[in-house]
Image 1 (tube, rainbow, N blue to C red):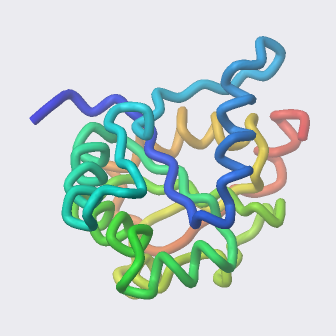
Image 2: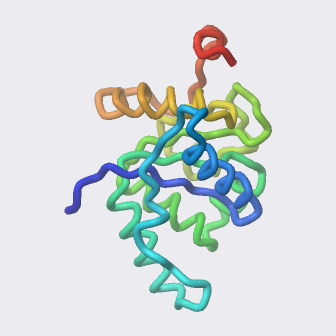
Image 3: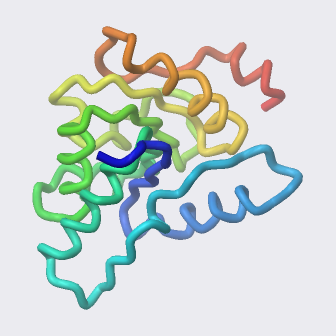
Length: 169
């Protein structure tokens, strides 16, 4: 198995503009946000067969140490429909037991159940919900993910307000 050092961004196709924004954050010198993007590793074209796309998604996820899920109603729907590529990604993420940061596109700092795919809820997968802002996402990648393997927590969690205050947001 390859070395897992990448961050996988999982999202519904309707939310792609937020993924592009994250890539812009990474390029901006004034924003302290960085991730090794698993999406850039293997190209999967729209014209590829579903089996090929799924194989490429699994390859990406096998190089992943953590996942940022762009939390939205579309993401919840597609991530739990059992049919879409996003549902397949969620299935593999659970299979590999990867830590998940749910970045709420609605900017909520709370757990928004309408943004979490049903399989994550059903399996009580430990995840952390944060607002869609670079500072709190980076903080979560640096802190939650590091302690994930040692944790016996289950289900969705969130950070208290003082964490956001400490980050100046």
